[in-house]
Image (cartoon, rainbow, N blue to C red; front, top):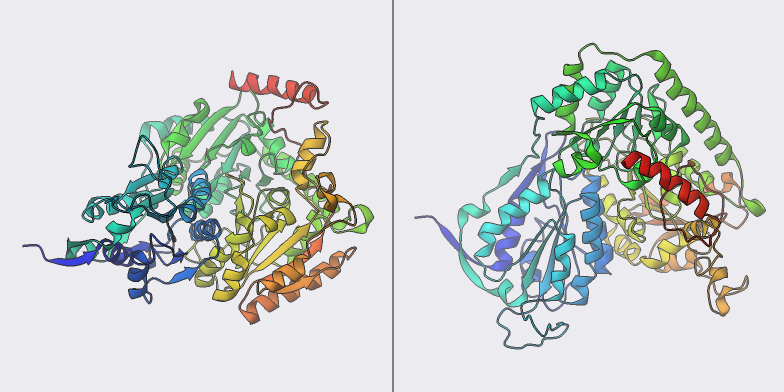
Length: 635
């Protein structure tokens, strides 16, 4: 007879979480679920909360202030660990649960793992309607947690304790499968959490999960080799799948063996050293003019581990209309897009096998020299931007990025999301030494969340990233760079990180509003409206109106603060940033650098992005011309 143990649903779930292990990229073994972010309320405090308390030494619980913020921090942890470890986030019924839906959407869009455990209403329904319950007149089985369904890779509502036995293996599968990876939601009705069942002891035996590396189909690979071999100007595009596979070294080896220029997408950034002779820059709308020029001139594009989002393809105007597209992706869903020749498989294995199929094929020097030429021109442009100042002598985004870049080493980690800073980091960041295979992570040193472009992520993500990087790179430091708009959206987890003792640096660039959307608005011929503070309704809009003292606010949240006065030089900012780094380390808490930046001085790659432009605006003519180019490619 199989041995059993009587446990509540919540106790069984937590014991299972503790028993799951993961093989990291360096071959070491660590907990698959290293911790929980939690805000307790009715719906999770007496069931899951009690179980987590009993196992607090095996799976620590970190207290959040806002459910969206803590769940986003959990997602950032998963990216920092290259999807090899998964954080858990739990909330109460109702608004607490719904606050995590945005984080689920971000994780889904970016193919990132997170386990969400929202409390749910009673399955017994005796006390209905309970506090925070939303009643559906025609379907009493529906709760607010059904909102997670479209933004979850796997969703289940546990209405009986024994359902855990069949669903938990599926939870682990989705969270560790490179093809299906994404958020998992287990809705936990509060009465079921406390119900007991005789669970099989074998369910709680330690299990090590190894991320599968499926090999590509031999026929698909041979056809891909023929396409690449016939190229004159091939281009290798590295996406996030290369990072998560730990295939950065293999990608560089492929480029060197066959003499192919290589560029990076947003998710694949910092895999290639900036000074590598075959590196062509960052691809896409917020990338570099060098990579975009190569993409337009390439006759074969080998895109590895990328879903070819519109910011990568310049809304499908970034490649020539007769380009041949070869894709390598663990997910066939992504590989077959846009009539590409699809190779489905692990990035590392596929690159090695494709290189073997190409044999001694080596492309000419003229194309590589072209890549070096356009990259030199882009570097000169960025040098000019970094050295310049904005109107009235204030700092620019490029200057701030350059200072952080120069001060960062191979153990440091930088991140941002939404607004103007992604363009500065993607287009202007220069990757130094890359430690491929030297730690439990891929060696990537950037988290640029531009799959969901979620404002507020960059404010809370450094908390999750800091927890991860303290394990893998204890000599490094996380820095996040973002604008005042993002700060005002979601700043409460600065206090959470300060309270928990997790150090990082946050650079708050105050441009008095949502300046990047103001740029999009006015560049198309529209009037500035409701984006900059000066263009918004209310008595606070004027030059002497209501403004936020970011330094004072961050200090009130427990952060060490460095205020960079208006009109300060790059050297002044550098000194403040270095002091912040030292304070974060020594004081074991976040350090915030507050500075004012120019509103309209940007690093721009000159690519086109499709947004709907009415015929009444001056930007409509350019829009119509670009749509014609797009139609030629898609047609």
